[in-house]
Amino acid sequence: MLTLRKSQDRGHADHGWLKSMHSFSFADYYDPQHMGWGNLRVINEDRIAAGKGFGTHGHRDMEIISYVLSGSLAHKDTMGNSTAIPPGDVQRMSAGSGVQHSEFNHAGGETHFFQIWIEPSAKGIAPGYEQKTFSDAQKRGQLRLVASPDGAQDSVTIHADARLYAGLLDGAHSVSLALDAKRKCYVHLVRGEIEVNGQALKGGDAALIEAESALSLSQARDAEVLVFDLAP
Image 1: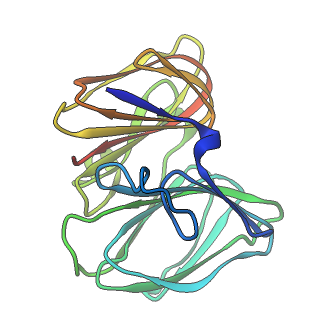
Image 2 (image 1 turned 60 degrees about the vertical axis):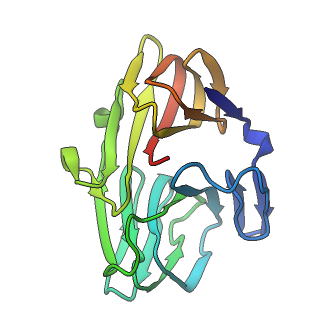
């Protein structure tokens, strides 16, 4: 079964320096019908103005992934990490027993990125950090595993029963992924157009999938897509 979630149906917040689209309930946006999907809790599409950002704040017991589309995101945390996250990089921060961090846009223009939260398999673990680069070539014409519980295929390691794939698809590109019908799948189309199991999606749309044994992506037009294989 596939349920389409249209881009315009997401929650929206405009703080001037920050413009955010919320796929699931977050902060002042509350929709009891969209509290998450499986163990996927947050997908925020954020745009941060130059010189602005999130001051130091804390997290606990959450696997947090940042996926930058344009600009650069400066990250600093109480684990001693101080890095820049450019487009193509995937950052994983395991909040575990508690961590504080800040995120700022020190680039010249707007920074556009996705902030993703996945519920961990165990609480109270030691906080951790990891960042890796995945080139466009690695994602073009296929679904590249970028986050997994076991670090498979040199993906970042998350402490959660979930796998995240990223793909760049266009024209004749057609890809499939075997699914466990007992699990859930979430497809977020970052940009472009694509068909997901025969259902047409446009940029910002998402497909919530359950009780299916396969995922098929086809009829792509300049598509960038994120695919989540999730615990029920």
